[in-house]
Amino acid sequence: MNTIRVKKLRSDAKLPTYGTAEAAGADLYACVDEDVVIAPGETAWISTGIAVEVPRGCAGLVYARSGLACKRGLAPANKVGVIDSDYRGPVTVVLYNHGEEPQTIVSGDRIAQLVITPVLMLPYEEVDQLTDTQRGQGGFGSTDNA
Image 1 (tube, one colour):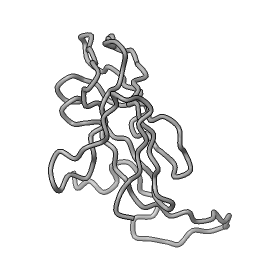
Image 2 (cartoon, one colour):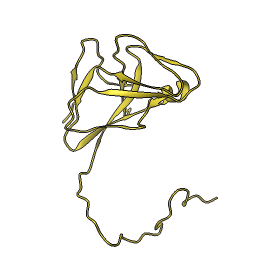
Image 3 (tube, helix red, strand yellow):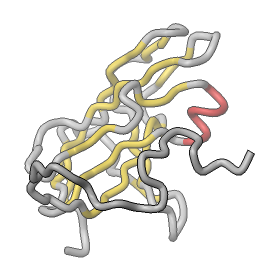
Image 4 (cartoon, rainbow, N blue to C red):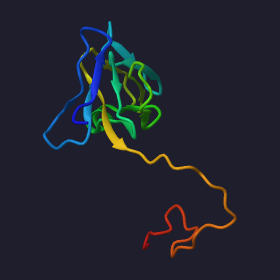
């Protein structure tokens, strides 16, 4: 497959676009009837006005846009949204305001980025033992040299 099929649910919706020729994520755009003000510590459900057909064997991952997150404190509330390949409904981005000032989203704003990535759908098997590794059970911070 060389394209991702997108259905506009509203005539004023924008298709996802890549900011550069080698960008991994395509920008998703707000498609709202009126401006949405997100207060500090609050979330808002922002419509993109589109539905996407994620190819079978892939997932659509909705990530924060670095500029929006770093400059305005807005990022997806669920950190990374997952669009399954069998989902055909509206793409909505739930933005959380991590900042100290209210932030306004207007129709046409770039609100997140969509990355289409392959996924492995492997069965899970219960076992009594896992394979040993050099790291073993070392978790958070266990590979730091400090």
